[in-house]
Figure (tube, rainbow, N blue to C red):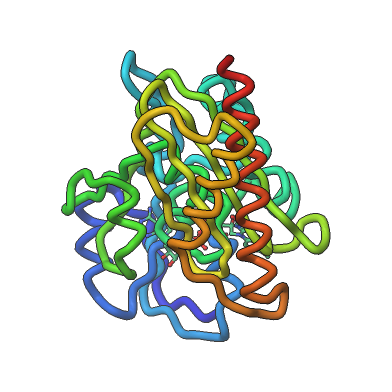
Length: 261
Ligand SMILES: Cc1cc2nc3c(=O)[nH]c(=O)nc-3n(C[C@H](O)[C@H](O)[C@H](O)COP(=O)(O)OP(=O)(O)OC[C@H]3O[C@@H](n4cnc5c(N)ncnc54)[C@H](O)[C@@H]3O)c2cc1C
């Protein structure tokens, strides 16, 4: 990677202005960017001076600045409580602690990676994103879009009474997931997300209390898997992923149901 000009942005507006040029690149932790094929970057935009590395809590939501690291997320008591520990389960497999001390939540969400554990979990938490110029929108909507040259400023997780469970399937520890599943159960809604199919994570919502019995959990999990596309790649076949999606969702549905009782 060859960077001609490095700018530590003094304001979000400056970062946004600089990012309107195709040759400019915003840096989160830089962990993914450094793997990109050799390229020439005219302007590297560093967001680290903008105070986006803090988490704040209100009565209704947890606000995560875009530069908050994955390690900050997995060790934050507020998030561990709000997700029944699922945040730790989703992040602990990602490379190693030193890596997670660098990789940011902003880079993870903005990248909309197909293999993303972060996206899979956050979709079920009904997170919203805030873009400097684009304003707030549901993550589920943002996740369907591609690229863009706005600046992601924060991710907002609404506080709710919910049960959360997360699991992933990996060939080796710390490898990318073959499949990632997350389930959230609130009093009247069930959310089930499947990622690493290997396409980007998608979420399905069901009204009411479903998936509490063995038979209904299998029915819901089958319905979720049937509504999504699965593909082959070097880590697994589409058929294997589909079968495993049914099984992992089924287990998470029962787990969240049990804990609620
Ligand atoms: C070897 C390796 C293994 C990994 N394994 C996993 C895994 O198993 N599971 C998983 O979920 N993730 C995994 N990841 C992804 C990782 O967790 C991060 O999501 C990734 O590194 C991006 O975060 P970053 O802070 O490094 O972003 P960067 O690399 O800095 O940026 C990523 C992209 O987002 C843009 N960007 C960053 N911040 C902003 C912002 N605030 N506004 C606008 N655009 C922005 C950048 O321009 C770039 O396009 C892996 C990454 C690597 C390198």
